[in-house]
View 1 (spheres, rainbow over the protein chains, first blue to last red):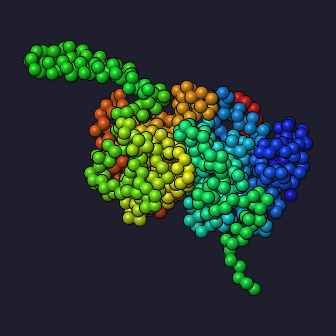
View 2 (view 1 turned 90 degrees about the vertical axis):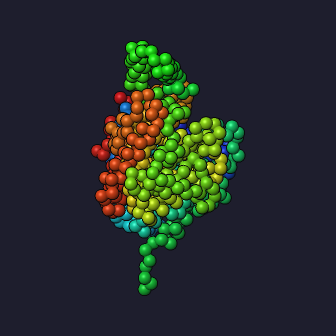
View 3 (view 1 turned 180 degrees about the vertical axis):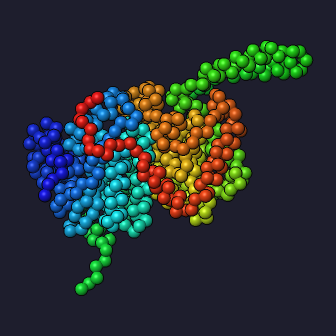
Length: 282
Length: 325
């Protein structure tokens, strides 16, 4: 079966250093890690357990049994504000498409995880910092509407710096748009789980990320509403090291569980199993 | 420093001079008609030049003007208002006030973000930045409105949701996210009005509505111009440029279909005639409620979903050619 184009792209278009080098240095413990091992270990440092940020296509491979049927792939960004700062918005989009191998900051579609059908959306920080603009909102809503129609559970992986400034208020409105879609979907008795990955902040954390029935966070992921720098500037003091980590949120009762990437697929499989339509024993 | 406050000083002096001449004319029965007329013409001309066409950045300052009518001024102008306090769990947030009210002949639930008029009030009201327990109180009252069949009226005026340590510990994200799903599902008409600053997600938490009104010189933005400039230009001093780029004015947002109606302000801004401005806004809200009252709960829900479903600007025909313009 054909692999969608975007899944092949990252390998063809990945930045030079990522392809050229055989080694990656762990940013946490400085261990030199053999790239092939790192890939096999789901981009988790074998020495200290640091979770590297993971490409959306790697996550799809990690989670699904087989094929991923992407939807709304043709939904692409436009430039409604004719935005320019140091660069134009279209120039930034073009550069990020090459850098990330993705067409936007989220991919959505359907597939099977441990034999169970689901609608899956994965955000990727390497495209515009995972920011939510019109395309992220539209792809999300199409995913939720598709899942509602087919009674699939929805699992979303979040990674985002918040709303995308280059789309102005149209970006902020995606919080409202996605929330409305979540509300319709969950009110109809469907199951929605989120996996918060590093980092999840701003307009994404303050909308669909925290509207899920079950909220999981990847180990050590940074999660919060306001950015760390904003808070430090506001209170004029340094924040504790563990502030806004997955573990901190668990302690404060904000999320259901912290899960290591190695356990993620099995955890999701069990969760989907609990909420699967009841089968009558033979 | 507020650029509007600086700029209007000369105008205020001119107006004080006119008032002085008037009282002299009245007290001493001298005819200063022509002098007063000249000064009045001058004042009108100056006001027209200063406020006839303002830049987006000037309008940000107008929205933050220290004498601009605040949420509390609107609450005082309601036909009746009884404040309902607290989120039932943690505390009562003075930056987000709510209660039962009478407006334009209807019983409603009102939610208003309230800044302070001076430093003391601003500290008490946290500069209009609601904390999680403020949004949870709002959610409680939204649900009350829905259950009792009372239309929901929200007044938006905040620099943004509170970004402090305690707010993170109490899950500001969830508090805002829950307001959004709640508003998406309330079975009553929702009318939101931006009366001053519509600061990002903290404003939107009260802004998912069937009908959205903006006071002419209020602003509504995905990020503060200062914050946007710091992030994208690495220079907060570029805030004026960011304000222009962000398209945060009422006329731009009406063009984008993000808001439905603009209530005009007096020349020189709402604070030049607060009583009239507040009355105009309440009348516009009343008009919107009249229109929405004709619809059944299901019609409202369907129309609300459709309204937000189509928000956004994107291409649906595949990718544009890669390459800078």
